[in-house]
Image 1 (cartoon, one colour):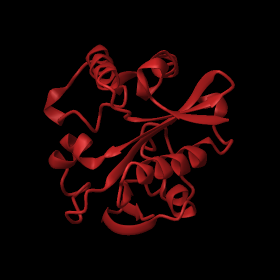
Image 2 (tube, rainbow, N blue to C red):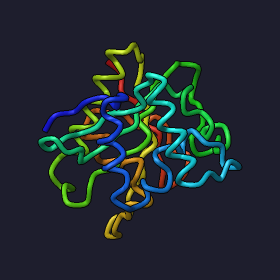
Image 3 (cartoon, one colour):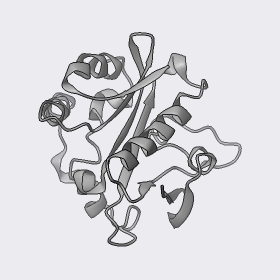
Image 4 (cartoon, rainbow, N blue to C red):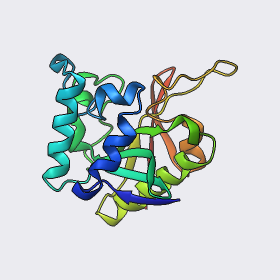
Length: 185
């Protein structure tokens, strides 16, 4: 498995990954970037993400199995994805004025789950953020309830155990089922 930033040349790979169905097909990883009142359609979200990529910004990383993209993690400066934070300040509140990078979304193709791709993507995202000057990487994982299944609709932010295993530290717990975690270089 190899991991690469999403660039204009890799857009077709991202597009194939995101058109396989599931929740990612609706938001195109724009949920964090859209204010809640925007209520954009899937097509509008796709166009918006395509423009971000065409502008030369690299909003995340793709994991490949051979030539096929099988996983995704969104990672960018928090200021790039602040629309949702502003509207959901209680859950995703700013802890301080540190210009953190945020790892906000995961998507792993169903037939590739349970193979360590999420861990590999998270580690690569942390390395990528630090290589681009991030002082801290922050994330907002789900805290699973023991004995209850975790749906892909609620776990798109990753789960707390995944982040703790990767060396993140819990910085806040704004709700019983959401944490704010951070990792420094």
